[in-house]
Length: 190
Image (tube, rainbow, N blue to C red; front, side, top):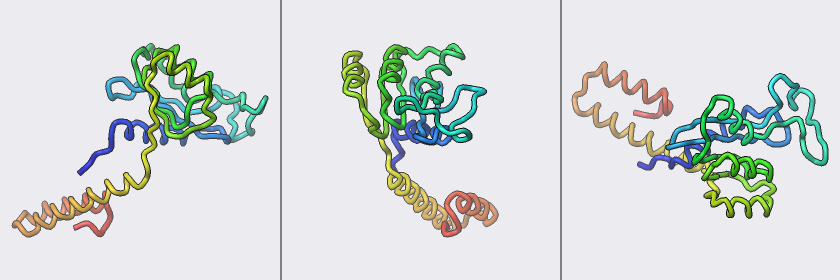
């Protein structure tokens, strides 16, 4: 049975973080990691205490929402606010960073950039990332991957439960395990 990769794991977290976005134009999430541990997260939204785009609409100037702080910036600022070093870390972002966020990522010493979607990829941003020797990789786990893994796990649990039922396992313990499996995978398990 396959587990999701670390890249898929962190990208899924970034996608969940993006659900907190308060900007109507794009929901973006970021996770900063060190040694396979999340050290900060951010989503695009208004400055603390200000009105949100969802409530008042986007404040557009030159085609950009100026009300919004980008997710990458929020994650980096979270590290700064709490005294967490970003040198040598990785960042997972749901969308390829804009040019300004790319510059901040480089200046923060982040060494790996993993993103899910191409979004207005600036050629100069790519040039800067290459020059700074930042690892860049597109990681976009599909829902099908998770459905397959979930089905594999469900099938494995069903097989184990059937074997337990036929092996003379304590009936009460079997019912307890069956109940837990059905909570996770539905009534068709067992």
